[in-house]
Each structure stands twice: as C-alpha cells, then as structure tokens.
Length: 407
Image (cartoon, rainbow, N blue to C red; front, side, top):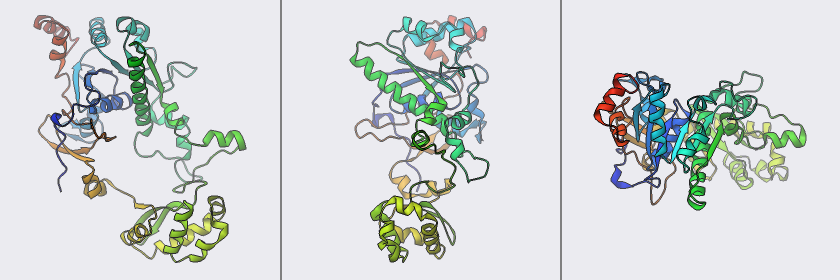
C-alpha cells in the first residue's frame, strides 16, 4: 500500500492560521519548534545564511544533493537567505520581527544582543512579540556561554547515564532526543504565551528553554529518589528499574517486548506462559513483591518466549491482553498497517520532483488537524517575495543582492 499524499491545504486551515513566525536558527531544536507550529497553520519564515543555508540541508543521506531529513524539518516554511552579520541584514530582520507574532532563535546566548536584537529591544518594536530562545544551558547562569549541543544536554540532564547496560559505556538513544524534547517544551511555552497574550492585554514575553532542562524535566523520579534515599539510579539495559516485569525477551527469531507490570496483567501473563503457580503466589500480587523476584520472573518468561517465534508470542500475548510488541525497524514501520491507517506515513513531493515517504503529523486534532501545505524550500527562494511584502522595491532588493546581504 502506498502512503497517502500529504494533506492539501483545503483540508484544514490549521489552528494557528494567521500567526507569523520568524525562525532564526539552524539544525534541530529551533527548527523543530518552527516545523511543529507550521504544521498547524502558522506562517513560518526561515532566515538562512546566504550561500550555505542551514547545515541540516546536507546532513545524513541526500537525494539530488539535499538531505531527506531537511524535507521533513522544513516543510511548510519559506526560506529567506539573509546575512544577519551585516547591518543591512539586521535591519531587515528587525522589520520582519516587527510584523511577527513569534521569533524562534537558537543561537549562542548573547549573539542577538551583539546584533542589537535583545528581547528588550525587539519588544520595544513589537510589544506583542513572543520570543522563544533555545540554548544549551539557558540565557542565565554560570554555564550560559558554553557551547551546548543536544548530546551534552542529554548527559547533563541525567539521561545519558541511564542508557545502556550496567558497567558499560553509556550509549545515545539513536536520535537527537535532547533537541526534540527542547523544541517541544519550547512549543508548549509559545502556546502558553499566546494564550496569556490573548487574555492579558496583548503583551508578549520571552521564553527561555535550555537543552539540559528539557531533558531533566522528563527524568521522572531520578532526583526525588536521590533526595529521599540517597539512591543514584544506574543503567539497567532493557529493563525498567523498579517496575516488574517489563523487559525485552528473546524469541527463536528475534525479540519481544513485554510490559506485564500491572497486577492483573501479571496474572494473565503468568497464566499465558504456563506458570499458574506464579500467578497465584500472594508474594507476587503487587509490584514490590515482583521487583524482589524479578530475576526469577524474567527467566520464566524467557523460557516461554525462546520456544516461540515473535509473531507467535505476540499473538498469544494479545489474546491475553498483555501489552507487548516487536522491536520495529524502519522497514517494519513502512510496512505496518496501523501506521498506514493512522496517516502516520505520508507522501511528500519535494521541490526537485521526488516523492518520499515522511512522518505524519502529531498530535491529531479533530477540528483543525495539521497538514503539509508545502514542501521544504530551496535556499532563499522566498527572499524576494518576503522583502517585497515589507515594501521594498525591486531596485532595493537588487541592491541588497549586489551587496550580498541577500541571496
């Protein structure tokens, strides 16, 4: 089955239609926030450096010289190639920001201040401006001037220490999860600030999101456990520490994930694997008892799974209403009917004439769902139309191009 084509604009105007976003930043965290707002109808104008553009254009695998990752990260955006290091470029940026609702930037703290574009200066031009500032360590504090990427934020936030097997070098999760978590926290901040602006006299505000803080915010009981008991949580491989049973188990042809940690679920799981004795054991009736005997329980489960293929195990577990699943690869995702049914695989047409399958849109709104209204832009292809919208004449635009302020 081929994925459905990306949603045409007529299907939904988008919940954020009418909002204008200026995206000043590159790579992952800031642009992912812009991507999310754009999918729900906001107009996103992305400012890129002339000549080079966002480095993400050339990251990982490329099709006709352009990253396919770029096609996802920059859909629903317009590209303006503008030299922000020039006085003229900074002046144009201020004009764009003066007409915007939201500014997203993920430069090193202090960069915009050097260019005369601090929040105080920009809000004086545009009192309703909501400014999302994303950085490694935040706009304040002793580490603010240090270079910070997602991988460093994941480590400082406590996540990297927990990933991997006990006694081994911690591993990354395989994607830039720190950047994405930061972007999503930024979007939450933007939407909250928009509501405040609407209900409190139209004043904007600045949102300060640090990579390490976004990661730290999802670290569950890490710090309370240390505070109350002096416990430093350690890596635990594929298991879920303190919650039992929840692990990956070997089958004859692969792995199956099983979450049997609910009290009634555990009983059904034990009965399914032929261990009614464990299901009826009063010492295992709650999580604390199961945690104390997790090695015994895991061995019993894997003794059962080793005699089955993954599909066989999943069939039996589903019949018993035990949460379970396979470890999906990209191929598994592309062929899965549930992904198809939920429109989580869409066909996106690139500016170079290719059709590629891309992730669908999350979350799913019943009345104003998100959509892919346009594919990712070529570098600077919207520069002239955006500047004309500011009132610049063709001669002025050409003069800026001659000066290499724009491209």
